[in-house]
Length: 500
Image 1 (cartoon, rainbow, N blue to C red):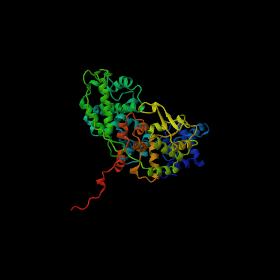
Image 2: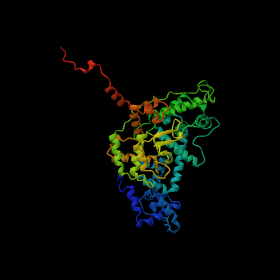
Image 3: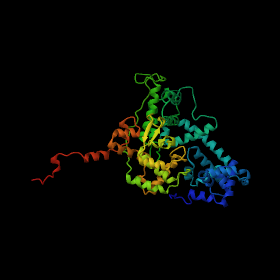
Image 4: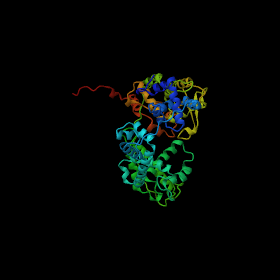
């Protein structure tokens, strides 16, 4: 069985909690939580590690609900006596920690800067709640003034990611007081135009991912620029927005956001401004809020990456290592066959991850060996009938039950990514060579393309063959095989003798 590197790990701790001698503490912890205490505070009051109750609730949700139902007969543990006032040193630490929190720092980042444990920061917030709130409100008020003054200026170019974190924190704080992050006027802004005009005009039947991308763009535009009126948007503001995006931190440490992501956001903004501009022969549905040609700035060039191919040997290693998986824990389905079926179906259907996790049992045509998927699952807006070969069908039959979703996953997608990396590590795959489900999809596309490009396009659900060829096919291997089989002139086959 694959186990975490932590000692003791979450599973061992959860198993320990099930022992009879700890049941009284768990019952008392549930009572404290029900009375208003946080999970961390209840753990401390009972002399338990800070994350004990949180781990128990997460990994044993059904048992936790059962404990709550048993509360009428559960003795309530009274909290300790009133905590004494903090020392001057503690007050100074709370002042600094709350100021960092108002600036958008996480508890882990605050702990690193102050050279303390994250649990210490959590304890300050729980044990001295009134003082923490007082200091946080004071710091948040100052941060709000700073965010409002810096929005749309060159000041945020120094560290756009830190500015965004602070702006989001200030927005939550201002919302709790009934205020807006930025003053709302009567003039039409890019955000209000998007929601009032563009969504009903162009996105009424758009796929969920398309609308989500626009929502992400509007969100960043609002925070970075302060959402000025449409008529006040200039080319320099668009360029500043582009530069801020380019300097944002990426998902990996010390990385920057992808130029392609910057390009997508900027193209969304340019499209919205064009639709707010005057109508024309190629822009007939523009609403004319801007009387003249709207400002425009060139997006970064698109950077194409070579598709990553997952070899059959690597897939076999991961398939074999699935025997040690212990999640997801579903009724009537064990984790190993669940992971094996996932790998096999992705490889043999080339479905996107989102579509894969949305497939319902009722959409599997067991007699016809196919999936009947509705149009809403695909970017193209067309339904798909996906053939299931014998290997894919046999693996699906192995996990067939009366549940709703074929690949039910009762956790977050972040947790899925973590577990998929654990599976590959257990298979002996080096970290640098770990892959995602999308890489398997591209591998299948490349294999099919070598035999029939049109079949590869239809299998991936693309509207055009160029999309398949540009983004999903690793052409180097296909070209290499074609060149190896290229007929050679007779003279080329001979070996030239030494020059006379």
